[in-house]
Length: 206
Image (cartoon, rainbow, N blue to C red; front, side):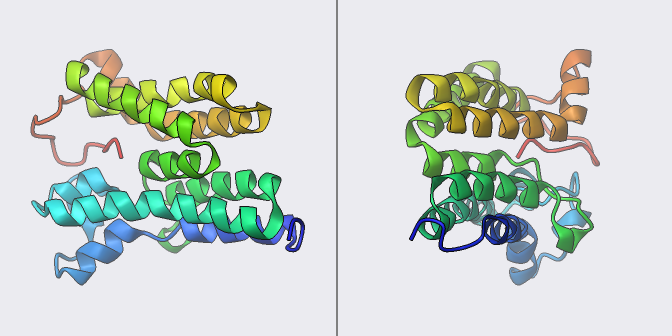
């Protein structure tokens, strides 16, 4: 079935899958209103957790990752590996800049990991291990995510080929771009640690 669907169509499909705002949909379905009016206004799992609903936050994290997995696997089935990598990247872009929300989305961590899981699971596992270790010892969620994604191109070079290296590098660049506010606070020494209450309006790391 390789090449059965046009590359552009599968890339658009990946973007549309990635742009599904599960955090917003789940919180609205639970009767909690618009998650964009809570905390930082981010649609990711970290901000959903601020509602006090751990189950909804876990569901958001899982679904945001699964849409990345789905984008890659569907495109791989219908268009081959090149289409899968492009669709995966498009899913991350869709999550970060969803057309339905005036291009104001999440940080891409969960969706990016989902894409890497489907594209090259050893890279994803390595990134998750780094993320968990950094979160445990550094106690700063955004820093853990940034270091984990910075490591993904190296992990891809070890475990996979140039195509996955390019995918991992591009996703990492996008994640860093969406974490600009976090990076400024890290430099200033004001980024909250895990478990520390965040000020209203601060950006999330998910």
